[in-house]
Every structure is written in structure tokens, then in C-alpha cells.
Length: 113
Image (cartoon, rainbow, N blue to C red; front, top):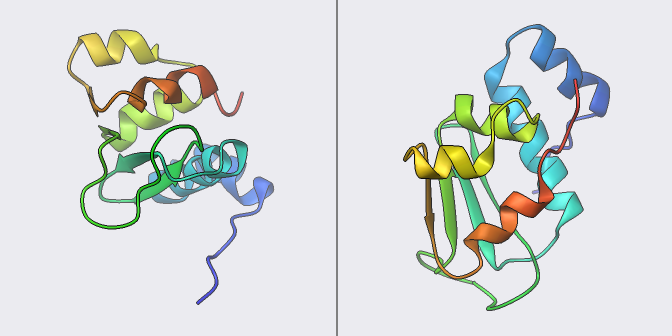
């Protein structure tokens, strides 16, 4: 089954309408397009997870060695530049594991609203 693509106009409207589910999925889609690969898994439960970044190991099954996980509110904050990734990691709001997990930070922010 083909993955549903969220158009940019729909993604931007999701922020205006406070539609977290669509906004999270749209920004994850942008990250996946910006840094294709399968080295790092970015998880934003309960709305989505993607694999990205081509450097390093190639993950196929089970729990990946490089994981970045956070709440939808924190994800939307760092994805738009309204929150600082490193501060949120320090505060325990972003959980990271693996040598390549920190590479997500260099790709942010994804959108400017």
C-alpha cells in the first residue's frame, strides 16, 4: 500500500487548526524527505514514526540502535524552531539512543511558520 502524502498546504493548515496528528505526520514526512535512509528512527507517539538518515548502520527489523523519541508537543516545537533540541534533550523531553541519534538535531528546524 502506498504511503499517503500530506500536501504542504494541508500540513501548514494543520498548525492553524491545531491538528497535531496531521502536523506531526507532515513534519515527519518532511524530515524523511530531507534525510532519507534508515539509520535513525524518529518516534512521535501516538502519531507516527519514520526512519531517516543514511549514514551509519542500516536498520531492517526489531528495535533500531538509533532512536529519537518525544511527545507531539515537543516534536512540533523543535520541528518549527520554537524549542531548542539540545535543551529538550537535557531536560529529558527527548529520549535518544545510539551514536547517530544526535544527527537529527542538525536537520532542524524543518518548517518556519
